[in-house]
Image 1 (cartoon, rainbow over the protein chains, first blue to last red):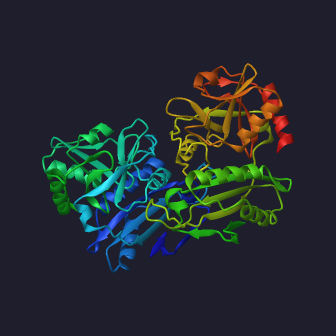
Image 2 (cartoon, rainbow over the protein chains, first blue to last red):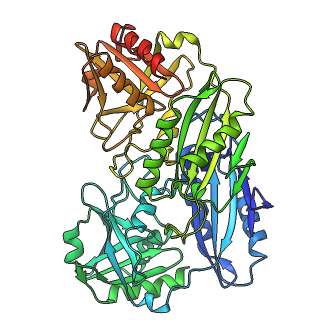
Image 3 (tube, helix red, strand yellow):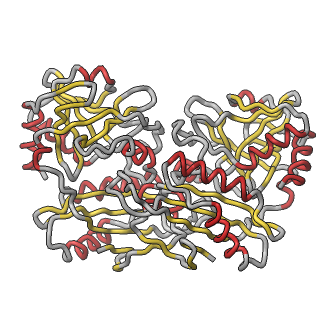
Length: 270
Length: 270
């Protein structure tokens, strides 16, 4: 089912700025065991993204009502995606002062990832870099060509994720995930002040580390840090946590203690 | 009129990757005196953009046929816009191997710019920077949030364009235009190997300079170069050339000889 501004529909006006400029934001959430996981956190990030782009936020009440309507139609676990665009109007890049945002709520099949991915996956390094712009960093906006191009670099299904760097050779994130590195029992994750998406699961992992009294820092990480890491894992709202046990041509890791503790603790928090 | 894959329509499938990721390209062309100006050049750039993004190019024949159909409905000069997206399919960022591109051809009213703009406009400097990524530089893709944010910086109608810089403080382009600087009778325009859109009218100006035996170079330009320029002008397919006679808080210029010569010569070439 797709709800367009609250109505069942599967087509959108071609004049929508989401199509013309990627002028909008999205959230991808897991619907499992009859509920949307971390819904509040996702709506909060969406609201922040809207504020950053000066798109009127449709409001928690409206979005929750849409999600309730959509969820009622679900008979199995699913992915629920929200897209909010600036809607129509404006002249060229110039936005209209009275624009009405468009909201799209849709459900999709959960990807059929092997359960073994929670024990370890293979990853690779992407050639495609992430550009840097603090005005777009952190938010989950619709300008995603860099991710699309990065994901085109491989079609070997045995490789589950690609890691991406900025143009200063700093590690930023996975194509569809955030990344954490464990070194000497400290959890490290890239700062996302100039590139990347600040994932909801990334925040939960940091919260989790705090509860577990594991030191966790946002910092600059390079390929050298990946090479000497004790453990590496990736996160997003659908996969939750996947340990990386091999980065092609770079390093191999174990599914280690800190990753396991984080995985267990997250299960309590979601 | 809007033609979606050759059929009159005004709505597009919500699953289109153009909406989800800005996974596509566009062209904006002037339809004046019963013909599309520089159509061949626009289609060539679109084809190059498709190649860069690995989107199957719909082909000149198909697009020309769409444009012919749309043009037949026009009774006045207009803007014609082409959007080509990767279409539907794929899983997340991953593209489908057999994706069918979506093509959208639409007409829009020509903006009612004052005729006096061809004699001189006021511009400003934008705070919003352009990010750098050689894999996206030059092509007219649908990831345009930086332009949208830049255009939000002013609403004074007396200011017709904002100039944008990259994060190394190099001048790149206007929000909706390319920029040329004249110094000591030499025409200079920013290199666009890491940011910016390589405009069709920009190419025509360079071709024009060659015919007029005016030296023209693509180079790195800074704010200092703007400050000591003799003439500055902007270009795009709709406005053709507008001289800048004032950049707020930076400099004032005359509508000078080189700009005038370029304007006249372009009229013969379009």
